[in-house]
Amino acid sequence: MERRKVKKSEREMVYAKCNGHCAYCGCSINYKEMQVDHIHPLRRGGADELQNMLPACRSCNHYKHNLTVDEFRKYLEGIPERLTRDSVAFNMGIRFGIVASIQKPVIFYFEKHNKEN
Image (cartoon, rainbow, N blue to C red; front, side, top):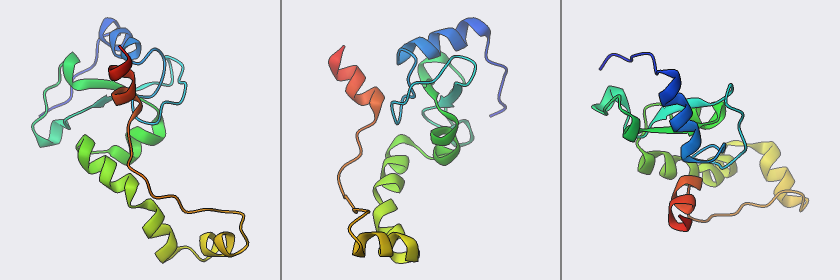
């Protein structure tokens, strides 16, 4: 599906969905830096409509790319294993006690935010 330009009024509504935070990591983002993420990616049949949009920081939007929410969660949960497998510096940090590998389920900010509201 071809991407359309998101109207200013829609961007404002997307930004308000998480009160100025990235829907995924929860970091505070200002309106101008916010990127509009499609929950269900357009390239995978997602709708280019407000209910399919969430505010995202540049980093989360970049790494989520064309993944679904569950695929993004699985990708993030696999980071400790990939770092242990691939990063000498990470393993040195673990051996010297200055870095820790924590494996836990990823719960996105918008999921916590929705439970609270």
